[in-house]
Length: 375
Image 1 (cartoon, rainbow, N blue to C red):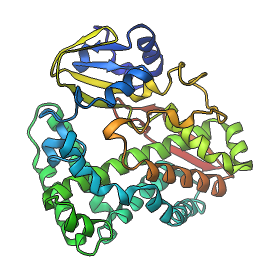
Image 2 (image 1 turned 90 degrees about the horizontal axis):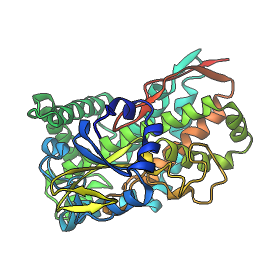
Image 3 (image 1 turned 180 degrees about the vertical axis):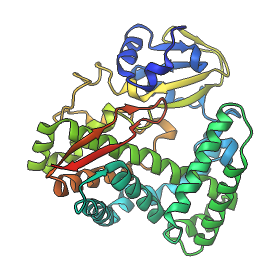
Image 4 (image 1 turned 45 degrees about the vertical axis):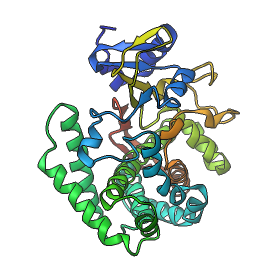
């Protein structure tokens, strides 16, 4: 497809994704040098077939910056890297920290109410995501500003490598600093000590996986919370309904996760020539799975562009992916979004939207700011 599409996919992608899903569900996007998969069933098929569509490719830019990790491996090696981190992020462990998450969300919202205005992304979403990941990974002794600095340097390095450059020096220093912090915390860490002692992962491999978990957990969860806040402020009738009945909050969270997944796409590389939905994909081709498109497939979600708190299949969305690379932090992400929304509803009833930036981004999507002011 030769039409210029990246701009549309980065701003309001949903009309274009609807068109592609109906007319060419596996479309060649020349600007991306990739195939874009848009149907729910096709996206699920690709993500569940790592033998044909793999992440284990030398072009995977994150691997060039932080080394091999659960994010960039498949098969036995993927399981070796991922499995040790499963129990600490399982449903039982996340239930144990629910009260801490709720307390932190309320504390952050309470910090706003003495002022006249605030950016909810900066004041609530980002610090909540950072605090909970630091807490879970036992990095509480590390200054938040240091973690954020490492995060930005590593993300910038990934962008440079994606464009064909070498890993820049700040990215290397940031990853080394993260390694030092993890190494000094591992001995007394409830999460890291057993992994360091029993998993068979090297110290370098543990750091690579912590980097994936820490920074992936911050950027996607921060964005998901900001998106949920934006929907609340943009739909006052829905907000009033949730204020009246907070038992609906989990359903609201699931719908916002479905409508605007903060990670809009996941990438795979074809390991062989394959034909899918009539598209002849060659070995080595980049296959980009659009979670945004799959989540608005009307064959799965009637009225896909609307918030519907009565959907029977709320958790059939692909926001957290499928297959071996399904999001390890799914329970934590849901918890953080839920307690953030509850804190908003309980603490900011007299506040209204001051500025709502549009949700944007090609790969990671979020509003730049979600500003509120006292009514």
